Length: 217
Image 1 (cartoon, rainbow, N blue to C red):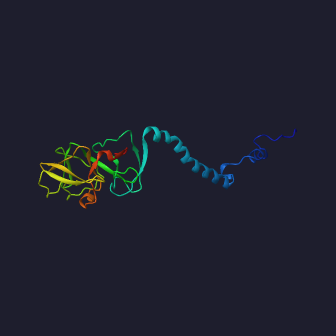
Image 2 (image 1 turned 90 degrees about the horizontal axis):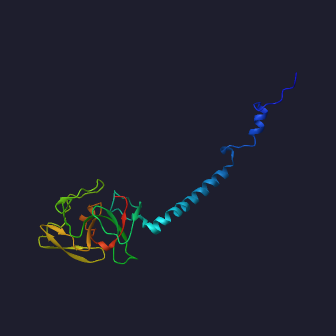
Image 3 (image 1 turned 180 degrees about the vertical axis):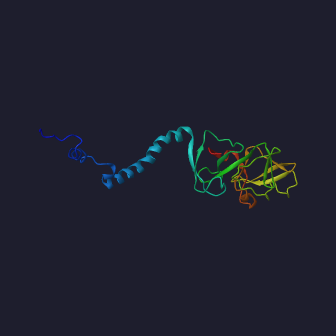
């Protein structure tokens, strides 16, 4: 009877073929760790390489929220994507990054929601914003203040004096108890409207202080 030669399915042959090949779990642990470290280090570089044309030529940028004025819409420390092309023009119901002062180098930046632009007639009554006679629906994330009234009830004359960031006080025309936003300015509010009642906020902002549009509404 001829001697049977080992076939490819016999256990010795299988062992002989399988031994040189290691699975991923059998590789040295230090090698797996090294690959993870290298991948983690290269990922930001790859993302920066992809994103720099957008930042350089497309006007896109990143902005880190510095304070709680826009909470809970935007949290302190949250990073937002912004867009700047040419000289940004404040637009109603959009959120902008504003320079909070005249000096471009040293002035802090603030995030505010534009509720009115030059020529609009605005009144904030019992926390509700009325623009040109119509109630402006606030986003659900706005912290309203039912006690807030702008201009205050004590303003009965034809003008009101409003503070601006880095631009001094500005005399604003009052029509039928509402503010007429003057040329060159916009009315920009924090989403936490309680800050206005506390006197912490300038709500009249020179439109030239607008630096970038926040892409998320």
